[in-house]
Image (tube, rainbow, N blue to C red):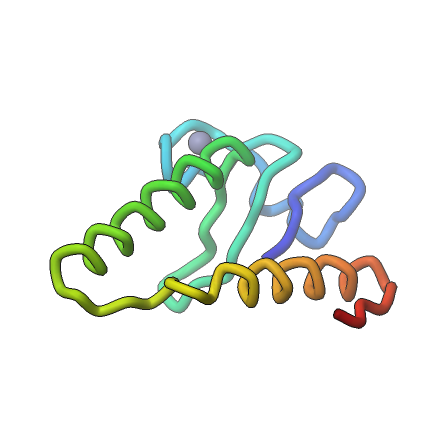
Amino acid sequence: MAIINYEERTYNRLIGRECFYCYGPVYPPGVMWMGSGGDLVLHPPCVLELYLRLGRDVLQIEQTTGQYFAAGDMHKLRTRLVASEMQMQGASYDR
Ligand SMILES: [Zn+2]
């Protein structure tokens, strides 16, 4: 994952690319993920919309199949997200 902004020239090639979610052009700030089939570029609000819909789909799978993927793991997921964020900021996180 990377943040597309005007200061980080590494991702300048992605400025104006089509958003994976809404198809609109993405100008900084944007979000980029390297995927196996190419880079995904999204507007920050579209990341949240996609995140919610993907989570809803997993919930629906859980409800219809009885297979549970996230139940009981939300604390672990949050801990991983916070640790990842702290690592990106160069700080340590010990919880
Ligand atoms: Zn978008």
